[in-house]
Image 1: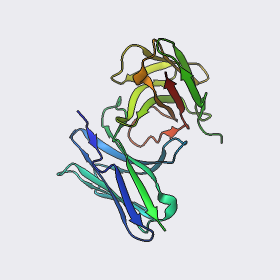
Image 2: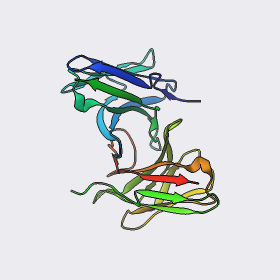
Image 3: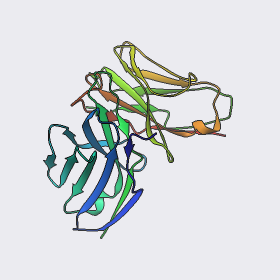
Image 4: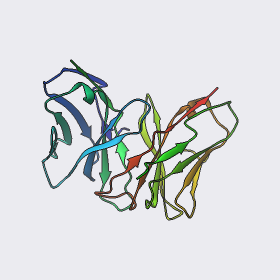
Amino acid sequence: DQQVKQNSPSLSVQEGRISILNCDYTNSMFDYFLWYKKYPAEGPTFLISISSIKDKNEDGRFTVFLNKSAKHLSLHIVPSQPGDSAVYFCAAKDGGSQGNLIFGKGTKLSVKP
Amino acid sequence: KAGVTQTPRYLIKTRGQQVTLSCSPISGHRSVSWYQQTPGQGLQFLFEYFSETQRNKGNFPGRFSGRQFSNSRSEMNVSTLELGDSALYLCASSFLPSGRGTEQFFGPGTRLTVL
């Protein structure tokens, strides 16, 4: 049973517009969430994170929103750039000291010029 | 500062063989985690080592094992390879054990193909 779900395998957006990537989770013990970006032939790189005590975290063009009641988070990229084209992974961690990262299957974002 | 390095980058093996993958973390990092990435399953956690001790283990069969050395370098071993073991194996390092606020830095991965 998947605890972290990214239901859209792919997303195509025009350059300059907003990209919205969604992620749902089932485990109410998760209290820390991360987004990673992955280019082909490279390992994932950390983008942005959010703690469950917040509902929004912003870093430049990237904003993550957390809706705890809906067990849903989203990553907004504004404005989208062709260099943002990559696979984006949502990950979650529970509050325990032994908690490891649980990843979604990823969403492939294509930003067209 | 050099990033996480993984060797080899590509590997082809046949069913029944065993394989050892290596990961060198960022200098000063003492935690190393291993993940398996497949198209159908995304990234799945294998295990984490910190200061030469396994802290956490994912839901993988005993054919998958690992260890960490005193210099924090880690190896992962898969015995009796199966076709389904074909995947990208990623290693990630962090200064502290995995936990809230601890960012993990990933290596480029080792692409294992089992024929």
